Length: 202
Image (spheres, rainbow, N blue to C red):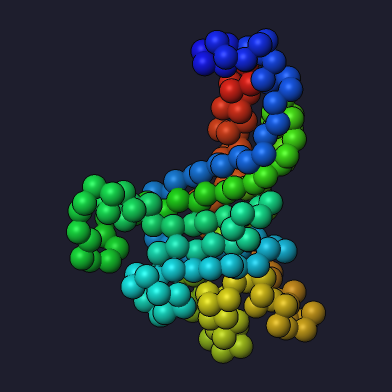
């Protein structure tokens, strides 16, 4: 209604001529905690991670994990949404974990394209990979255990680049085999596409 009032041509003109410079897409996953899985984006490096104390790279409960450059064309932040909500409500959180865990995957892209062409963008979630750390607990390979540790500290992309091609392919295949059953990019995008189309109705 605001666009219809202030813009000559109204909403229809905005859809036809407007440009989308930034698009934020968020998915909340219930029942999982950030420290229980390894998230990576092939070709994208981890940028920052923050822990319970507020310090960076401290071996405590992981709160926020970022991949990509903040303010860049593609950026992913994964964080403890439940804890954020409780802090906003002024609730003091003493214990770690607990029931009703809620983890948010928030993707920020800068398509710089016409708003009418936004629905043609590819499924950005399909590029993000998520592996369960529990799937590796029975693995006695110390080299792979070191690789996982580097992944947690420096990100999977950086960790893979530290190894020769043979080891890199082996480790990458293990990450793929350990993919979590609850991360389904196709199902996620199936929900987002109609929402994008609804916004483009003139």
